[in-house]
Length: 205
Image (cartoon, rainbow, N blue to C red; front, side, top):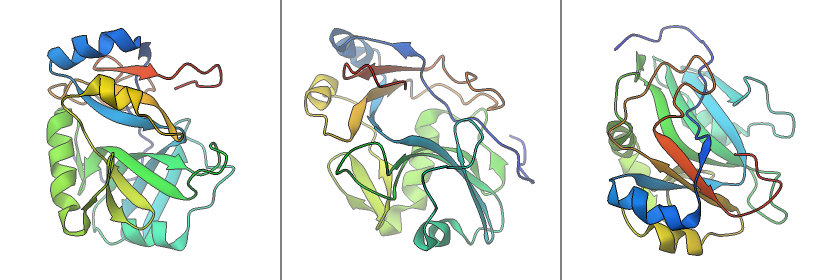
């Protein structure tokens, strides 16, 4: 693994392949895991010391959101870079959550690139990192008032899909054994994940 010593934009892993609901059982039987996909704005968080940078998946600054002081404070402190992938719930769902970050992956941990590390091991590491502040909720672990870590499910995919909430777009199914590839282009990590979403002409994830 390589060191990540200075800010460089990294593209978040995103699925491109779409599957229909009847295929959920196939992926479950083949060892995939599931996370809910929130109806928000994909956000990459780069943090070291007092510096915290929030970017969209297009390597742009947010236009409809300003990070709050508690968001910034939460990610400050590490002497080395950490890079997280999250969904920002703020402006897309009428009457929905505001200023909420839903973390679903990590690309750099304490100055070390996680390229070559499996999705399962990245999730385990985040669970350990945030364990002191973690409170279990239905589909996430609350780690701060406005920040949560996505729950990763190994079974019950069809039931999860049938009970999606108003701020949920669908499910993302991921191969837990898949190794992270260099995040230097948008589709670099599309091969090990698929999406199953509620039918809606406005969804583009």
